[in-house]
Amino acid sequence: MRKETSTNSLNRSILNRNCGMVNALSMVGGRWKPAILYSLAEGRQRYSELRNGIPQVSERMLVKQLRELEHDRLVARIVHPEVPPRVEYELTERSKELLPVLNLLSDWGRKNL
Image (cartoon, rainbow, N blue to C red; front, side):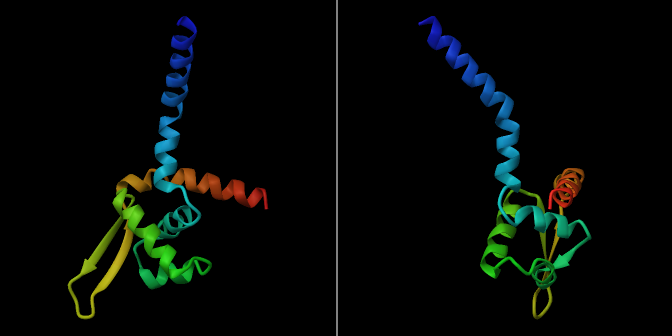
């Protein structure tokens, strides 16, 4: 019985230590989310600008990833009341905290090409 308690404590300790990483990766994980965030670091962009800036991503996947980023409050979707409607995307204050991490990741990627 003592061994089970020790194992449970160890599992809880590992979970507590990793929960921040798991949460972060659930929000920014995926093939295109970091690229979208990195692109939006340049400033507010329309969908077509994002699409042209990341030509490898399919339209369907870009829309999906933008919705998920918006849901996690990492990207703000601004709809201008015009005809035709104009939609822009920008980083939120929450996601701006990620920019140093994204810059480090980009630097690491360049070094390891």
